[in-house]
Image 1 (tube, rainbow, N blue to C red):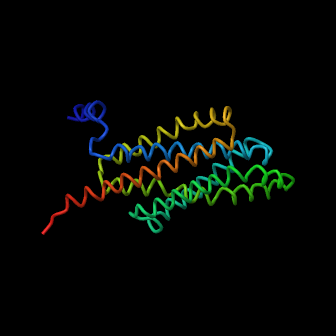
Image 2: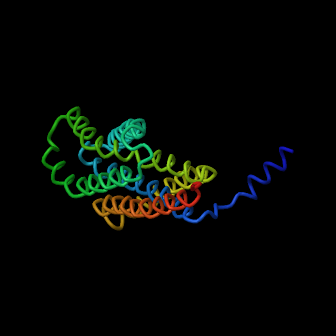
Image 3: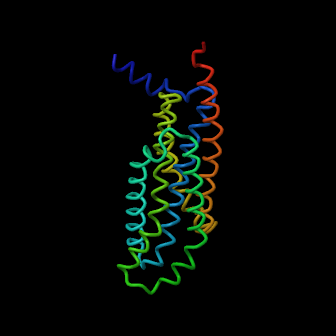
Length: 216
């Protein structure tokens, strides 16, 4: 009955026990938290540059979501099911975030006298490259996980969403007590840890798939 199915769904779902899959699911937690750390850090960083919190919120979220959406749409062509390409994307993400963390303050200080329209254009231009590559790790990871253990995809969605929500609170705490530069660098660090996880667990996946393949 539908009631039985509902109770099974609510009470019977457990994290998968397939070796390596739980570690792979941690990847989705890391990129979810990393994304929101970077987003919140950038919003705070651009408030003074754009002159108003509403402008910063609008420009940063618009730039990141648009660029990330384009990156997600392009990931099948640029990354596909290649874990090696995904690792390279994660390296690029971490490097771009680290560069923004270090270079934004002096750069924005030198451009603070520009008209608002040009400031908006500068904001989009600075954020779009990072947003583009940050849109690739999630769908790429989902495709790899679907090949490995399809029932775990629902967990990937759930854990990524939960980490994004909790990460937004953590990002504010980090910004207050650590500073904006450190918040952005922490976001970059989470992508580096995700890189390590994806490397280790995809190697395990390939070895398991090889053992399961028929021989002779």
